[in-house]
Image 1 (tube, helix red, strand yellow):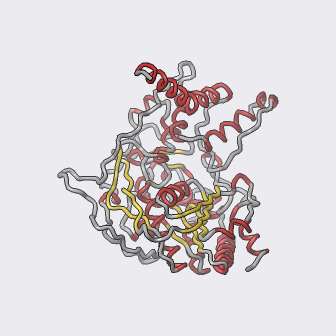
Image 2 (spheres, helix red, strand yellow):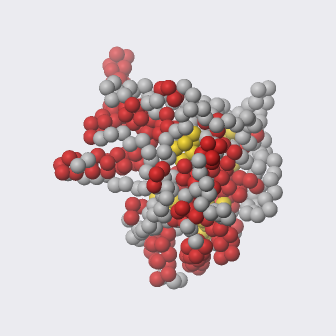
Image 3 (cartoon, helix red, strand yellow):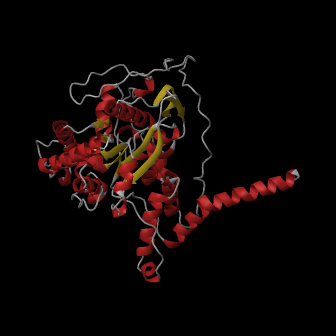
Length: 466
């Protein structure tokens, strides 16, 4: 094969790849419907079948966009692309296609050229306390947000459900409304509802323990509670707490979990115990990889504590970085800025995006045989860390209420699993196991829990005691 033929084949393959990943989906979406800017909660949507009548009344277009926006790979980049197409209907601009970020250095170095990472391979076990947390010196300097003067955005303040906070920090409004009690649905959550959920979790935990299965509730963090200093003054000024003595459902939920003896890892408390404040990127509402890593380490520790087994561990001796955000760390940026050239001029992003230089420690130890995880988009990092670094041999993941398909083959799943993790974000503990809440103008009423994985597992174990 001569060089010219090889070059032609390479060009054909590149065009085919572009058509499959970018052009065909984008053109299809452009032809059949408007671009959808907001991310409608964390719901799970099925690919709709085409019906001419539903095409005429636009139901097909809406259902397709909902499925596409949550299911298709490279979702953050597509969200940005949708906004650009919506803003430039007459001339489609495909400049959103970006090259891969440069390979980061193995260990981050400071301005003097010295390595900032600790050279020790062993990581001490962290004791997770919910109250009276003793803040320690963080292992990595990058775990601390750099000090800066904070200021509100000047002029453009975002959209109905993604607002621009201080120094360009983006928030979905539901996190702030829950944190301060601005929305009725958070204020209305009763102790009885939270106690009931804690009791169902305790039964799940006990029944699994009888079968030799470890169990843990993983509470993922809220950006509002982890970065309250960046919440904009203008948003606080235009809202008033509905109840003067409002106590967050999350705070009460943690209290009831402790009272009922439910095993859990609370990410926000964990980060405080580590002296960690750099947990979210400015441009997204999902934790950064550094925060996800620490929660994963704590979940492995919890498995060992319950089982007495020594397994493979995650470890890191350095922090990598890129000027381009990896994965979901830019997941809501496009909702606010895509296609808005004037506003983009004032957009503030992180100078660097960090993640640990992770490796597998204690490779001679066994992996966790099988892990079963239920939760939302935060569990994508569980799957990444636990599978990529051979912490688990097999992994089953269920996404929230799995689109209502909650009748799982629990006898088979429970029969083969060794660790069950149920994830919930502290912003909506009231609806654990069901659909995530709608935000924006709909951040008012508590959604019906509906069929959900947690209750399905509870019902199975209740009906089939060990």
